[in-house]
Image 1: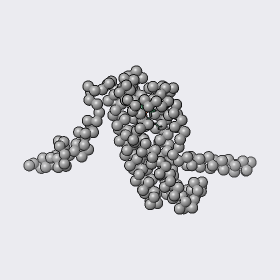
Image 2: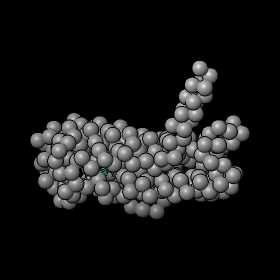
Image 3: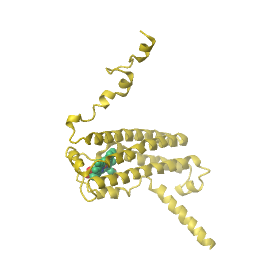
Image 4: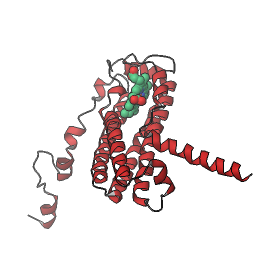
Length: 240
Ligand code: HEM
């Protein structure tokens, strides 16, 4: 066997031709889309690929947030913020991917939609796992706050002294903001493809998507800014 053969011959278990394909299980992954003959419209391939990619990226993000939660439980703020930052990077592409679907015309989309049954993003495992981890992160954050004997307001006022925990709070806020940004771009996508005053494949009015934009994962982290500004305004008024 030549030196080159020794390094190109697959050594991992599996049937695929190369270790790259065996490790990533690309045979299975790339068989998860309809074949060209099965597509209800040519645009359906992009529709499927975008959804499947988003599910994978959200799965990755939720996994990293689970690790961030564990680090937070151990008061390891440095690793917690590092992992939340990674999750945030994983969440950016699904937001960008939404724009790809804006290139499907409303008429063509209805051909694809005819094959969705009652399938709806409300059942997205990726998005649901992100919604599930949010309150758990919030609880862990508040446990750390009470261990330090602080309120959210005090943490923000004494941010230099409690830099690590303050940094966690700011990254949690980033996560919440990413969820809002996803929802905003997704709402605009739904409005331009199917309209803003219709019902979805699960019978949900599109207006519900608008309502959902008003739900926050970490409302107190948004509220604290109002308190800070109100206090600053009061101080300024007192000086006049
Ligand atoms: C042509 C593209 C799309 C349209 C027209 C669309 C439309 C809708 C509609 C109407 C709903 C409300 C529920 C229902 O179906 O009855 C919904 C929910 C949802 N969709 Fe989509 N969607 C599209 C693409 C996507 C993509 C690419 C994702 C990425 C995973 C996604 C994720 C979601 C999620 C997570 C929800 C629940 C939203 C929430 O909880 O706020 N959708 N979608």
